[in-house]
Length: 584
Image (cartoon, rainbow, N blue to C red; front, side, top):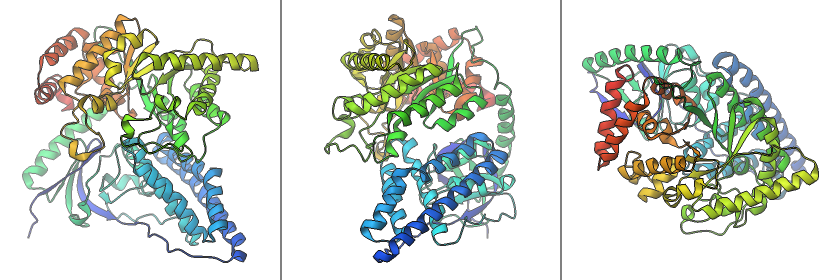
């Protein structure tokens, strides 16, 4: 008897459509039992740990080469990051201290240390950082297999082309699979920014994350349709549903070829207006992929990872080498480095700040620079300013709420420059300084802030959260966290116009910059720069190249007259699908 059609809804993570049988992968790591050791065994356990780490690093080196050859340089860079984590002296020393002080096995010590960092990242509301917990679990599995004397995880055998389902796919799981036999990925957990989904996008297969308890409903061999655009997994589809999706699949393939054809072309409107199209990154090794895509520069380099992955604040020299490498590789393209946005749910272990009832309204971002983080900020500025001689570098300040915070930071920047002059260390005298507009008070007073800045960049993720008084990490509030809210759209329009009145350019580095429905409206508002996720780059470029500014201005005028979110969304969808039926 045929099963009835059944739909599971998740979060779209990689676009496209796949039709085929499901292969269910398992492989959760069991938590090791505590094993105490005698004093005489301590040296042996440390040696066992070091061998396991060395063997794991050798595996990662081989995996990097294999991945680069099969999938390309961008997804392969993930395994360089993994090597960096396993060679981090902070992590290694912490494991050795636990073996020495607690007299526990190497497996226990390594598991406990990695669990601490997994909890730290899992608890964050920022999707980018939360998704990194998967990488840490991946590394834990790899090392523990060597501690057990088992070596690298065996590659799953695929007898046919399949849609892969797993509770969670790690980068190692993903790249070991036979590429030509993978139609798509579906996961209970994970995020759009996880490395497994980055790999899925790089090999152009659809992916869905956040299916939650789909494992209870999916069996090996189930016929399924995976819609990576809508985030839907359809099990046992009817004949009518299959026919509809086969047509949709053919249309999607034509769109992929269309987007690839504009990779080397400028982001220029039909009437000749050039728009800066940049990318957001968080790791230096993402730069090679940015160059391959022909992206115009970096509109947001998040520096928090340097701080969150360490148990003590990173040194000036360590940061300098990171920033220098990015700026040097991208020269002459511009790199905007955001000074650390720590606090809220992103608290490094070395910062001992008092607990707050409302951390997202407390000491975070620039507020930390004046409340316990002044020395860390000073060190970071020295590293950034020293890196400025290697290319085009700009500094951006997070969580600005009033102009006095900008002037405070500019004073410190000037003091750092004076220090470096006395020390004879070179730097670029003119380094543009910008402010992120992500707090309503900053948006309302954007003209005052712009007068003290060289540019503004709108961080829509937090701006939406604070404008609508909605916790963006609270799933129960999803229905209120709406990017198309008239209040948000009017505020963004005001920021752009106020920035232009003061003669500074205005960009956007939040998720809205990657929202294809909003692209024409933002062009109509006069947005100068879009800083988007790499996967959205070609789609946004296609839209920019297909419209003229006057047309976009008319759409913007109409949107600004709308009074409710639903009307705005419906209007945006209608105009987008009418203008781009091939992208529908």
